Length: 275
Image (cartoon, rainbow, N blue to C red):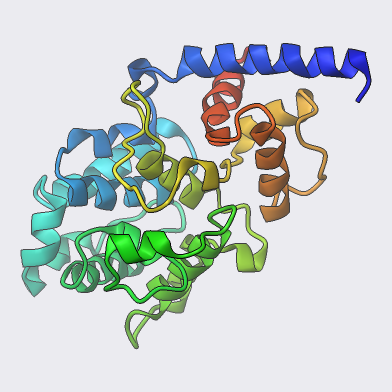
């Protein structure tokens, strides 16, 4: 590496560290979809509404917040209790739900998946753990050799989510991305960031412990994509899974233990119009 290049990388790291620090604050929450799961304290409520808010996170943020809040209201303000205890007649209120291409069929399958899943599991994290049976203890799961990134976790979750029951509606598959189709998996990676990253800032929840922050892959939305290319952190022309890996590996040089914390810097620079 040339001396000038090393100096440039050092300056860029300092710049991104400063911006990550600037945007990784509670004020970030108010206008972001992460505000929805922040309404709750129970782990399962956070998981359910975090997952749903992430899946619906495309389009204008005020609309995303409105539609996700509508789901909370439809579940009587208590998602986990509603999912475990609802009656068939309670599902009628979801028949008119729609957000872009996500419709009532999708919503009803999400409810069915959650109900089936939480009958046997305490945490949604289990569904992302690859090469294990779902009933393994945390100690056993942690003893297994873990991959460098969450790629296998995303493939595992996709297959489990889409294969839990015999009547999976095929149209719902498009809402659950997978690296197996070379998708950038932006929304699921954002959800994993929320669940896995932990620091003292109080934005991300850090309630999952068997997936690690150093395994996370950065979610590339339109803002992150634009800023990363302007800063020459990303060179791959397509915005796909390989691009997400490339950007994460670039950022890993700045912070090997928590490369995805720079999501705050890149997103903040983009959405606030600094670049």
